Image: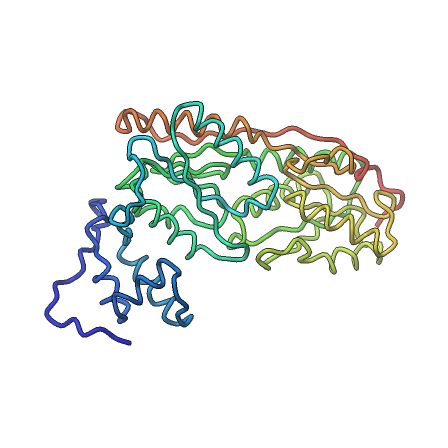
Amino acid sequence: MSDKNAGHSAPNKPDSRTGSSTLGVRMDDVARLAEVSRATVSRVLTGTAPVSEETRERVHRAVRELSYVPNMNAQGLAGKASDLIGLMLRDPANPAYGLLHAELQTAVARRNLQLITTSPAVGERADSELLALHRMLGMRVSGLMVATGVVSAHDLEPFLASVPVISVGRVEDHPAIHAVSNDEDTNGAIIADQVASNGHRDVAVVIPSRTLSVNENRRGTAIAAHLDGRGVRVRRLTADVFGSTDDRLDDVMTLARNHDITAAMFPNDGRAVSCLERARAEGLDVPGDLSVTGLDGATMGVELIGLATVRLSVKQVAERAVQLMTELLHDRASVPVRHEVIRGTFVPGTSLSAPSRTA
């Protein structure tokens, strides 16, 4: 249903050149741009009633274009602006993100701050994450920490005028966005060196697309590039299925059975464990027929299952990110933009050994 809003003033859109605040945009402005009723906008934003996918997309598009911030304060949901920090967390079911959440919560509480967290459903793309970030601004958070490999730096630009923003766990190059992250290039090189040093010369590397995960894409790309530099023949397998740890495993198994590779490398432990399970089901010996490596080291008992991986420095990343946020809340103008990277450590495992044959 379209609104008839003739005679209304144009939406109060933010000026990207000046970085002016986005808080003046109203729900009526979103409704007018999306050509729906104000009630429909409310239903989409609160999720209180079903709407068509086409309508939902129009509303989300208008929200993004106008950088609309829902007035959660009017609904009595706002927190105390001075101590409330918003966190966008990607997939808490992933052990690496779950551990990061726990460490951030501990570090925030130690500084007498409050953390409000939102997380998209598995498989949701950047649109839903951006909408959640807008909602948190409406709750009057004093800062945003973004721990997701989906939202791009460009997507975060509209938030910078309102609150300090820190990218947590992801390497960030944007000149206006602070970051405390895992050193994905070095971590990729660490595990690649281990595989090459064990004598593997034909290796498959699963590399998720950037739309799936900026973090994992960078890890996989770093692994492959470092193997190239060591003279290893690399089969790059691009993964592009949201919420799946099995994507490209069919190809890995085929390459292993055909003796085209002696090792398979994955950008997180979840994918690597899925490969271990699949190899066992298909009668492949690990590491005799196929060595397997992961990268994050966050799964409890990873040493017990014998997975060779790199353990991310999650606790250190969380502590440094919260310390930086504290400094920004105290005097944002005096803190220069920082891009900190923290390397992980190799965890040896029985899933990696010298190949028993050549590919």
